[in-house]
Length: 214
Image 1 (cartoon, rainbow, N blue to C red):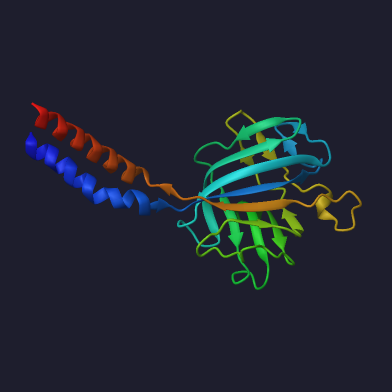
Image 2 (image 1 turned 135 degrees about the vertical axis):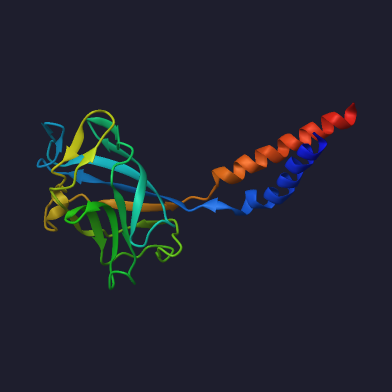
């Protein structure tokens, strides 16, 4: 029994520094804007220029330009908040100026001609945006947002968002143009496996202290 406890203690000693250095490469993409009346929630056509926001969480170490989405929360003003069905094929479309010959791009895509993203030709992000590694940044001066009517986002609430298209953003001259924004938030969180090993180490220390009192 004492050998088992000592094993846990050894695990603790090894994983303690890892708890402070090992991180998951989790990043969230937060986008706000408006959708046009050609977009549908289930069978309900959205009102023109319906405000929306979404947060897509992804692992920035899992791709290059396209990153599988682990969770997507989509809020439509006046309609509610919806959560993408787990297992849905959906990627964050993220490219910096090096990858796209001078423009930044951010958004969602689920395959060929299935996308909902924006370009940033004249953006001045601070700090300078790069996907290697991802940095926390807010884009301004968004330009030429793009959407495909074939992108479908199924929600756990039993409906899907289809016919996705931008509202007045699609025409630069629109008097009521709403500038969408995009924010990459690069989070650093302890890896679950590291936390598990660290917990085992703490448990071993507790048992060892208890036995030493007997």
